[in-house]
Image 1 (cartoon, rainbow, N blue to C red):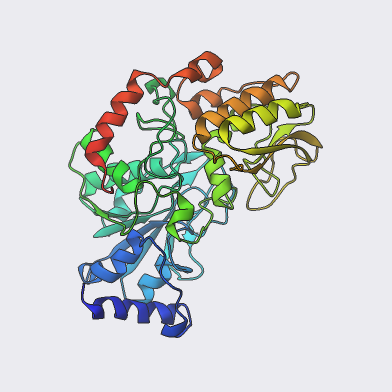
Image 2: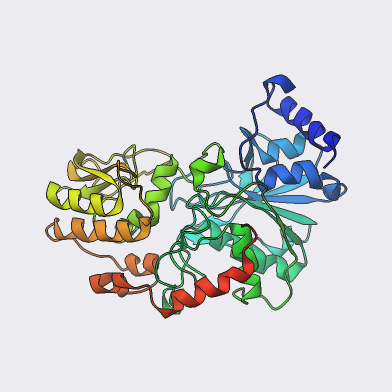
Length: 410
């Protein structure tokens, strides 16, 4: 790449950040798809009407991709808002309203309403040449952004609109794959691909696999282009990337919350609290009548490389994060995941760890109940049988083999 191709975008972004080129933040180890777009693909956007399917994680440095594109003169005409909203000011499950983005004055089209994920309308898509999709995933099948991407790909197949996926790292790494394959009867907005719980793909790779394996409900070809990252390796977990963490949703404030979430999210399918309404969702777990034993916590902590402790907490209403958390205003007891590592080792299997911890907490809580939602999260009813945790099944092995054809990064 020519030196001028690198310097010019840096100067533009320095203006957007209101700092001089000398003060511009040092580059991370990994260059995201959004950065590569700015440095190498801007001429391809010239004269195009562009829509953005993004959330607050769509950033270059500390600047939202929308603001960067507008600074660089790209003709952005429509914004699409997934769960939590375009700017990320809505809690989990809260309906997103269509309207106007106050910062840019552009129209925002809601794609999350009443707990349902919606497709972009053909009326809006037909006004666009390209839709740029950029959201930070967490690597979990039940995280709704991958379903939003699927519905976008299905929608543009009908209109012929191009989709460019600006790829970002899988925070859990590209080598970690775990969990049962989703069974058809449990397809929902928290699972719509026949993949494991932790899929080990970037969203760009998942898009390629969805197209290649005919997982999309589309009768026409999908015009999708992956703007690949530079410098990302499959062995990298988030801390290895050098990138700043911007919460992909309000209840995942740090990488540690998101990594544990791959397994502790299953608490959402029970009567126990998953820690919403506290400062550490998915790391603090329990209920008013939970009585967990330190000996059990020490044992599971040693097995997985996690530091655990007992805790008391009172879930509260937190606007923009959790308005009505489970056991709101009731003093609860349970477990605090203090650290995802010990002196001996680090957590390498958050899915299995989270499920085993759930079993312990359920046994330690009188009258604790599993909700039907647990089957949608796990994609099977096998999660209700502790013996099924010994194997993810033959479909899992088939997936691991098939996914190799769609891997972009080493």
